[in-house]
Image 1: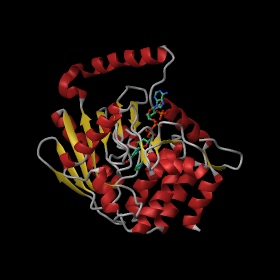
Image 2: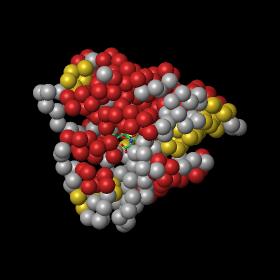
Image 3: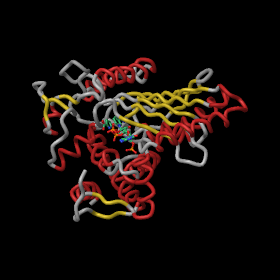
Image 4: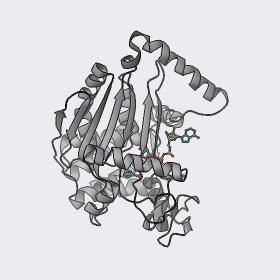
Amino acid sequence: MTYDESDIALSLEEVAALSRAALSRLGLAPAHVEAVTATVVAGERDGCASHGIYRLLVCADTLKSGKVARDAEPVVDDRAGGVVRVDARGGYAQLSFQRGLPLLVEKARRNGIAALAINDCVHFAALWPEIEAVTAEGLVALAFTPSHAWVAPAGGTRPLLGTNPVAFGWPRPGEHPFVFDFATSAVARGEIELHRRAGEPIPAGWGIDAEGRPTTDAAAALDGAMLTFGGHKGSALSVMVELIAGPLIGDLTSAESLALDAGAKASPIGGELVIAIDPAGFLGGEAAQHIARAEKLFDAIVGQGARLPSQRRFEARKRSLSEGVRVPRKLYDDVRALVD
Ligand SMILES: NC(=O)C1=CN([C@@H]2O[C@H](COP(=O)(O)OP(=O)(O)OC[C@H]3O[C@@H](n4cnc5c(N)ncnc54)[C@H](OP(=O)(O)O)[C@@H]3O)[C@@H](O)[C@H]2O)C=CC1
Ligand SMILES: O=C([O-])C1=[NH+]CCC1
């Protein structure tokens, strides 16, 4: 997105205060306010505009629609072996993840691998904050969640799949982890929504209109169907997310989530699957030496001028921590209007 001189400069503390004020005003319980604010601030801090302050407007619509339980208390279920389930009881996913994380980490260390299923949650967040929480424990991480049926399967023209992100993290001693986190659609829906707000066209390949014709009009793509990235490959990955973070954990597909939404235009409802792997489970005392070998791969990527995923994000983080962030004036005004 392009920003101009009318952008508002904010410190990260001001972003957090704005988020807390808006969410509290909307009636969200304090524990959820803190958990949601942490991801909104992280998104803005890391230059992920589609999942930063903008999400407060989406939260407002979702909270006003009554589709999220404002004071849900997550219930952690210590299943046998390497499985943890957290029943979010209709609340936002962030607090459930926080509540389930300690047991996920403990089980991954004990068994070598463990999985956390969050059920019956409202999910609007980027997955990398959760991935980073797992890699911070020295564990390899994977995360998946379906969304609403907005995306046509490759070869089709009607929305069926979610934007279904896939995220992966690898701990790196003394460095930021290796993390990628992307929608299996060509781009996150939030990015198209931001283009619509800014009155900007979208690149070809992001979406088709309601008649199935390619479009660069953001509104037409939002009303028609988004496209998967990489054609049939993104489409298959998207179906995998539907399956492993839907029926496998007893939760909704994106089509079921959208049906439950019934036109409210609230955030998706359903499940999330997070997998944590302890390298020591495979390697015991030799784990560190093999983790160190992975560094050669990262060096070789960077060595030929390519960049690692999340590098842009970590650079944005460094900048934001010292200089704060800049937010488009209209977005700032719209979010302030939730508070004033
Ligand atoms: N909760 C939900 O239901 C959903 C959430 N989302 C979230 O939306 C966010 C944005 O998704 P999306 O629009 O697909 O993300 P992007 O296409 O912006 O980025 C995807 C990933 O690719 C990396 N990347 C981008 N360009 C390069 C490059 N040139 N070389 C190497 N790596 C690169 C990014 O790193 P970097 O960040 O450093 O650029 C990032 O890790 C995600 O965080 C996702 O979790 C999406 C869909 C649904
Ligand atoms: O941008 C996106 O695609 C979404 N973010 C949260 C739900 C879907």
